[in-house]
Length: 431
Image (cartoon, rainbow, N blue to C red; front, side, top):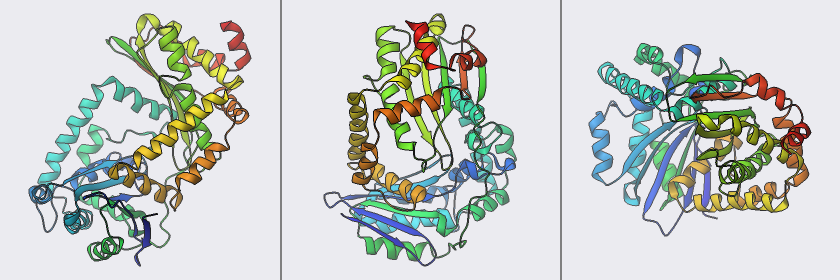
C-alpha cells in the first residue's frame, strides 16, 4: 500500500497516497470545523471565511494568488460543509511546493481586508439570492432546518443576508483562531507524491499553526426534532422531501442505513424508482439518501412531481416504506453492496476524490479504513437487520417534511405520522 501518515510535532496530520502512474497531485487541507461550529451570531461565517481566504494575504494579493497557481496550469478552490471545511489544489508534481505554500499562506496569513470583505459580502448575497430562487436548494435547506430546529447543525451554510452583512474582519479572525488549530487540520496529497517531501514542506509552511492540546468542539449534541416546512410557489412541479432520524457515523446502524437507502431509492433498480416512476409514472425524480453527522443523521426521500399526482404519490411511498420493513431480498442487499464497492473503487481512480475520502476518514474516525474492512462491515448486514432497522426508522417516529411548489393536495405532517404507525396496516390498505 502506498499510503503514509505522519503527525507533526504541532499536531498537524499529513496523509499521502502515491499513484506512480500520475504526473499530477491532488493536494488539500481539511479542517475539522464547519458551519456547525458557528455561534448563533456567526451564522454563515465559516462559508464567508472560505471565500475571504483567497482575497489577499500579507505576501500575496487576491490576484497574485490566482495568477501564481494558474501560471503553472494548476487550480485552487475550497468548500464548506456542516462539519468540515476544505481548501484544495490540483497541480503538476513539480509544483507541489508552490501548492503547499499558497494553501499555507491563505490559511495562516490572510489579512481580511475591509474593502475585499465588502465586495465578497455582495458576492455571497447574490449566492444566497440564487439559492432562494432555486426550489431544489430551498427544499433541502428547509428540510435540514425542520429536522434540527433552532440548531447550527440544521442551519443553511450560506447564512442569511442579515448575518453576512454584519460580519467584521475581527469576527472572522476570532472564528478562525478558535477552530483552525493544527490538531484539527489534515493535509492530504494524492498522486505523484513523495511523503517525506510533503512532510518537510508542510512543517516549514505551517509552522505558525499551534495545537490546542485537546481542543474539543463545543457545539451541543444534535437533537433531531422533526417538523414541517411548506411553501406554495407557482411552479410546474412540487418538490417534496420526507425524512426520519438517521444514524451517526460511529453508530452501529450507519452502514446498514446506507444499504437501506440504496435498496429503497439508490438507482434505477431501486424500489422507489421502479414503483413510483416506472410502474405508476408519478414523478420524474425520486430517490433516497442517508446523511451521517458525528452524533446524528437523517434519512430522506426526495420526489418531484406535478400537483395532480401528489395525492397518489405519498401513499405509494408509504407503502414502499412498509414493505421494506417487512422483507428485503438477498439479491437487493448484494446489489446495494456492489454499488458501494464500485463507488469506493471508482473514487480511487480520481486523485481529488481519493484525497477527500482519506481526509474524511481521518477526521471522522482518527484513522484510515481499508476497503477490505469496510466491505467486511457491509458483509455482516443481512435481511433481518435491515427490516428491523426500517421498522425503527420509519414507524412511530417523528417525521420531517419539506415541500415547495403547488402543494395544496399534499397531506399534512400529522396525517403522514398517523399513517406511519404500523407497516401492516399500510400494506393491507394498499392491497
